[in-house]
Image: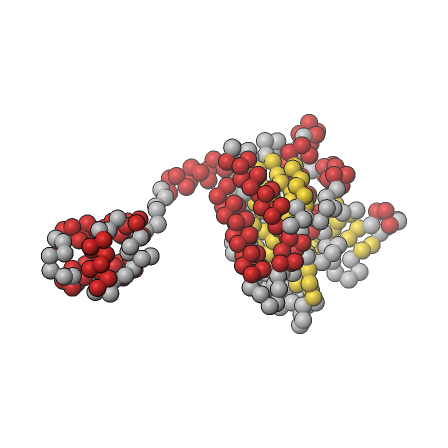
Amino acid sequence: MKLNATQYGIPPELVRSLDLIGCKTATDILFSTPADLYRRLPPGTLTYSDFQRHIRHITAASSASGTSGNDLLRAEESNSTIQSPISTGNGVLDALLDGFRGAHTLEVSGDKGSGKTGFALLVVLRHLSNFPESFALWIDATGDFSAERATQLLDSCAGSQAECETVLDRLQVSLAFDLDSAYEALDSARVALESSTAIQYIVIDTITNLLSPLLSATSSQGHATMTHFMRQLRELAHEFGITILVLNNATRSTPNNPHTVFESEKKPALGPSFPFLTDATLWLWCPPGSHFSEDDESSEETVHVAEILRSKTTQSKVWCTFRSKNGMILA
């Protein structure tokens, strides 16, 4: 940063003198020897002790503020009771997702029918059922949120019957068909979080609908808008220790998707840089012949594959299979 910035509090005369010897920024000061700089200053500019005092002030202003380890530990302990791991009730799938809790932005991607929405809805409902003081925000960018489906999924969630009756009251659903509406929903969530409302999950279904209309092969503005929005999500997650699930559609990959252990002609949408804007990418898909029924189509079961394509905190390219029946993940 330029030395004439007011945050350093340097006398204008000293700024001009430093400029004459080629010191124009705080970096020039910090990576030079104070004695050498002082010898190069015009005689009578200031005393060496005063010069050292200004150097200390510049160093302090340029340094990141420290945080006590005890303070971080106390903050972690105060949140540990509500920051539960992601839970679906399926032991194998939950083991794959072990390590994701609080302060994470998780991309859940897959083709149509892969189970993205059902997965996110089950995770949120199970959490709300087990933690009666917690809340969740569902940003619906498709207009397809089904309260009836949410009610049906409650039957498979843990928690007492009395707690389950209040679950839907603590799940706020906001329609957002453009980025401005999504920002408004997130601003409302921030206000609630600052007033100690225990929001632990935010789901965006789907992030593709909000961002894909802005992306263009001939302009970087859409990419910059996407990057800014995702950074806002990550800052919100880390500031308040919440989990944000962003559901992303799939697009064709030519050649096959190199990031999966399976041969796949599909990959997450929104371009190659989007996965690096989240903490992890969970890829869901249904292998050929995965749909079957024992009696009739009303009781059809489906086999799904869940794979962590990329993760900053856990192992990548690991996978498992799980079954669902009528949209519900089976234990």
